[in-house]
Image 1 (cartoon, rainbow, N blue to C red):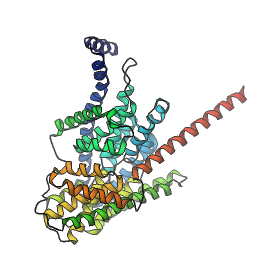
Image 2: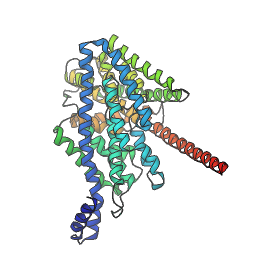
Image 3: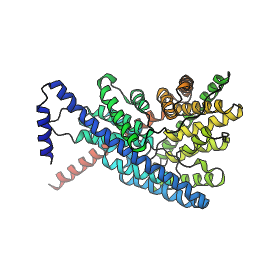
Image 4: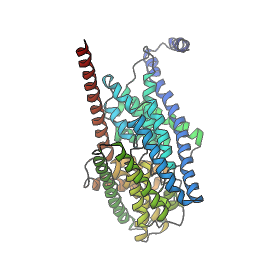
Length: 464
């Protein structure tokens, strides 16, 4: 079959006399194929993620106490699957993609394979489904980015030897952008994310591939799901004269909150690194699940899941007053879920935490519906910026999710203010810290493997 495909392709391209055009087309084909695959996988993953999230709410509506069985069971299975089969499938996946981009050279293929592979795709998906079924406060977007990066890497790997060389780094970066675009239906967000968070290479070297990949992945998702908006069209009209003061307040609060949450997550990971026995990790996972189940049962079930329900409720209904304990519980739920070591992202949960804080602050300031909606959107931008330190990506994502172009400047102000105040807590983003940890773990594993080989060699020499 491979020989037949090779002959057909050669016959087609032999007919193209312009060598530069032929080279450009050949180099573009892997991006097109990977983008199409990414779009299809993203649609399937998003649909299944939403299905399992809905099942959780159906179950607790039937018998609310079942969450005490569902959460521990699913959390443990999700953690065990990652721990046993693919340790680098844990968490959001964005730090792993960042690490893979940094390692993208032929000498580090083995390390990259631990970060982006077919096994990672499977484990990431199943662990994420289990987490959200168990009520975990996790999102699908980070995992989709790692899955997309793995798809693009594998397509690059499968190219025959005679095919023109395609940069592995550019393939992985483009895959991450396409993954985000397909997950949120935000093509501009995917492009800005690649430029702001991932790229260390000047964009001019791969801009065509990046744009076409985002377009193909996004169109594939739209063809399957329709031209949807992730959130919809919230009303942001009749803004008051003091709205900018409100934006300043929510941007400062959410920027600090997002950065502080990230700091706590890193402290928890540092504490967990002192665990010497597997049962200690298991106890932590069980404790996290039980705490989340207890908050859901005794305080507010809105703590569960990605948080899209909170965003849509606060933006599109009259129930805009989120209590302070719900907002805090969302943040706590993110910390507990993310630090279990199972798969799950923080993009959507961060947006929902921001929405909860913004709704509460808007209630305190007694703003009208349109003004409150704008403060909620700005809070979503501010909290996500506090976590990721990508103000432009955060603003563009929320803009594309809601199609509210009239408030782009308001969102940008919130993003920039949140980005500046976040520096008070930490100069680096959560993803930057986790990327360094990821690289350190890979290096540590490599050193252990080398020592093991040296020991085996010494044993053989002694036997001789």
